[in-house]
Length: 296
Image 1 (cartoon, rainbow, N blue to C red):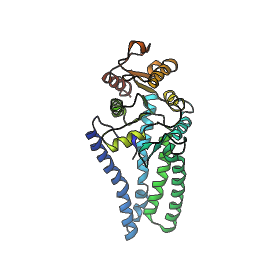
Image 2: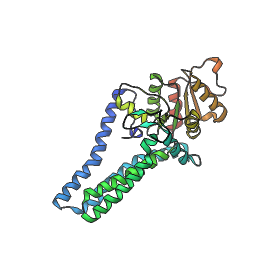
Image 3: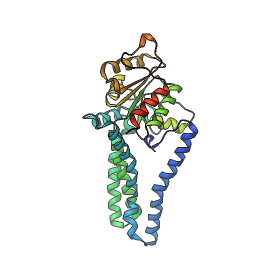
Image 4: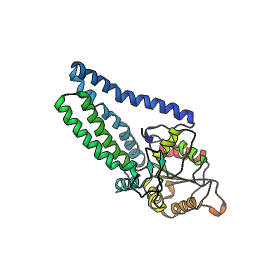
């Protein structure tokens, strides 16, 4: 399950309900054709349906392509070399899918990129080739389905890793920041909001999904946060809880980014005023983002 597949709601109960519907739909879409193919392989009847059912996993590509289409419609073509930079940033990540936590005590690339998504791409591609050859030799539709699933897994990994996020959310870690990130994600879905925050909610599912969109890593702030700020069309900085990092992010935004890309959540002390950027309340931020994205 990918975090970018989840239409975030505003409450944990809403999240669980939508996740349940999503899981059910994914299971039916994947296992329904497989069960039918297994029956066809067993009975030898209706073999003309095999090509259509075996390629059913390809339908799961639609969501990733939908996100790309939405991104291009709202923000236009990403900066030159953005896809290569996103692949590099993804490899710096400390996300460990097996532990559902961020590993910041290891060298970048060890668990970064989800235990190296390049390995996933290579393994899935090789597995798809092997399963395809076996399917041609045996004529089993269920094996052809496995080949299609593995091939789609490889393609989806590349498509997802190469896409710049729609929003980078910068803040001091805490429940208030986590809540605001979820509300922004709900608003911009199916586009993706990323952060470098340490999230903890009451729901293990939400924790896992938020961490999936986390670029928190064991490398330096300049190696992750600054490139994300340059690549993301929208930069949201939550200044309600000012730390040294948040102040540095505000200063970088003032010096290096176009004002129209930066949204600052306040209020801010007068000593930390950001010239040219009007601090917004959380509600005003959501309204501004809706006006920016909804017309597209």
